[in-house]
Length: 292
Ligand code: GLU
Image (cartoon, rainbow, N blue to C red):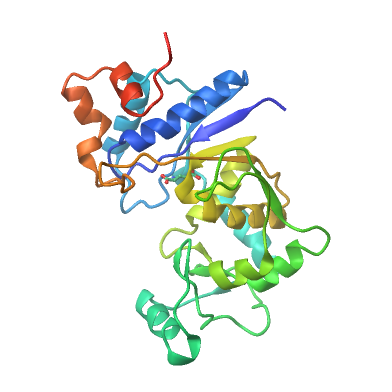
């Protein structure tokens, strides 16, 4: 199968140097492998996504010299595919509706008998308040849905342990075959949300369904998402989808060593462009200048 990767920004703010780095690393890996670089617009959070930001993504990436097949995939148009994946997991008895607010979760997790609240890739590990004893029945509800992690792992690991292959490096230098420990998933990740309030999906579910749809062979993304990868690999196993290679790359940090976030507008590509910087200047700033 030929190499395919993607850059998957959310149009909720300007692209900054960290995004430029991620997109360029992905595009270069595709180029080196004679494969394809795709763009995917992750706009499931319609309360924050803006068409102006989407236009800016296209403009900034094109200015940096990147190109990709069009039209690009847009997650807001893929809700039926996410619903179908949720239906599959619901029919397996692995989902349950949850009515807890953030506050309920924080309070339940800090109850004295719970010990110190565990922090996972999605924040506080869910203490299980709404988790039913037996799988709920009936039609798939239009509600916040959580994955019953213990039950999901039980089913997914029945015949083969879970693992993925890291072709880059995790935050602690992790590389190569990465086994996924069940106990760690239950204690440190917990019952993740797969359908969010008013979205009908979640980052974890959409990314897995779309990487499969786009036949991605290697996911290239920042190390900040390394801890989310076991969740994605578990969902791939449950949904019968192929597991791509994962290439997590270093994060671009500011002078204080903090990783750049959307609010770091000072490092927005647009501002550097307005200041008269060239794409070559940007490449130099993120350590990707091609030697002449
Ligand atoms: N949309 C995610 C973000 O902007 C990236 C998703 C991914 O690469 O898996 O952080």
